[in-house]
Structures are given as structure tokens and as C-alpha cells.
Length: 297
Image 1 (cartoon, helix red, strand yellow):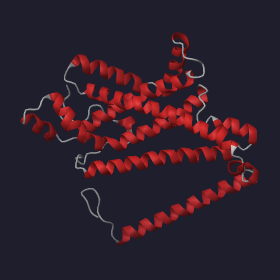
Image 2 (cartoon, helix red, strand yellow; image 1 turned 45 degrees about the vertical axis):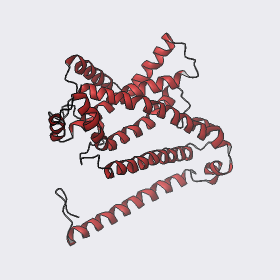
Image 3 (cartoon, one colour; image 1 turned 60 degrees about the vertical axis):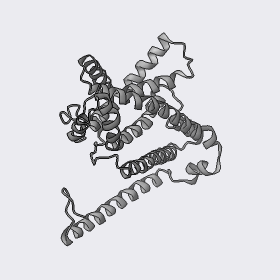
Image 4 (cartoon, helix red, strand yellow; image 1 turned 120 degrees about the vertical axis):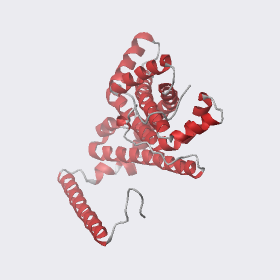
């Protein structure tokens, strides 16, 4: 189907596409064959390396499922806090009031520029020094704190870009019927921008879920990836364990993106979207955006 940006390929273009696809499949197959052959030479494909995941239920009940539960718990807590906080910060960045816009902008730029690992380490140190959080819960608190501070700043930029991606006429029409600035943001801009923001938001939620592994590697959080050390110590199957853990991460993130795709389809069918789109590479979101689209209280 032709569009403004894409023409239907002709016979020669289709032939080239088939050739490129076949060439890629051949190269990919050769690469996989080399990987599997190398693993076989190193005895990494032996049955005793993989059989514990099928025959020994304790691998799942003692290590993998509890680790997955800890990953989901840290990720979901961070998502529940970071999403509304990021929305508030994003709307604050669009405020007409300098006393709101400038501090919020400084907050967002500051925490977006600091690596999430450093935020987790700072959080852990602060909890040790200034709180009574127990040592068992401290890694979870520190991981969630770091994830919330960093990702709420990134989500704020997604919100800004999503609102500014709407046509200026949306704001002008709302003003023409006498709506106040807060009403324009609440009832006109934000509901329509949700559809445009959703792909980038889902990408950031996947990042939150994956970044819980940082807490396991550095702070001792008992999340999914950290279980690799214990399983490998008991069964001497590091590569097999990492493959299984990677598959679990893929399944969880695939479920998240599938749900988001379904939700986006429902939102678009409900005609709340405008066709605008915010790119998933949130690290490059430009806070400058398109000028004069939305105004916030």
C-alpha cells in the first residue's frame, strides 16, 4: 500500500527484498551453526547442563520463580510510581509559570543525566545513613528509588513530546470555546497525546523491568538475573542458566508489549488519537519540541 512516505515496491524491488531476506537467513543460519558447534565443543550442549530445568523442580521453585517475582515486584512498584510522577513533571515543564517550569526542568535534566546505577548507589547509602529500613529490604528500596528518579525524568520528556506532537489547532479550538488552560490540558491534550506517547512509554517500561538486574548485580537484590550465580554454583551450567533467564525476560517483555499493542489499538479505534507518534528512543526526545502546541496550568 502506498503512502506519503512509502511507495509500493515494484517487481525489481520485491526481487531485491527476497534476495536480501534470503541472504540474511543464510548468514544468520551460519552464525547459529557456529555458535552451537562452539558450544558443543565446550560440552555446553550436554544433557546434564539443561536437564535440571526439566527434571529438577527446585531450580524453579527455589531460584527462578522467586527471582522472577522479585524482578516483577521491583519493576511494577517503580512503574506505578514513575508513571504518574513523570506525567506531573511533564505537565509542569509545559507550565506558563516560570516558578513551576524552571525548577521542574532542572529536576528532569538533573536526574535524566545521572546513570541509574549511581542513583541506586546513592539511594542505598542514604537509606543506610538516614533511615531504619532493614538490610533485607534496603536493596529493593534503593533499586526502586533509582528507577523512579531516572525513569520519571525520561517519562516527563515523553509526555512533553507527546503533547507537543498534537496539532496546534487542538489548543486553538479549545480556547475558542472558552476552555481554561487546565481544562485544555486535562480534557483535550493529554487524552489525545496518550496514544502518541504509548509506544515510547512501553519502551521505557521495558527498560525499567530490565534495569532491575542492575540492583541484583550491585546491591544484592534477589532478582531473576542474580539467580544465575546460585544455579551455576549448584549445577555448573552457567550458559544454560543465562539462556533460560534470557528467555524468561523475553517472555515477560513480550507480554508487556503485546498488551500495550492491544491497548494502543483500542485507543486508536476509540478515535482519541490524532496520528501523532513519539519515537521509542526516549534518550533523544527533544524538550524543545514543536513550538506553541500545548499550554499547561
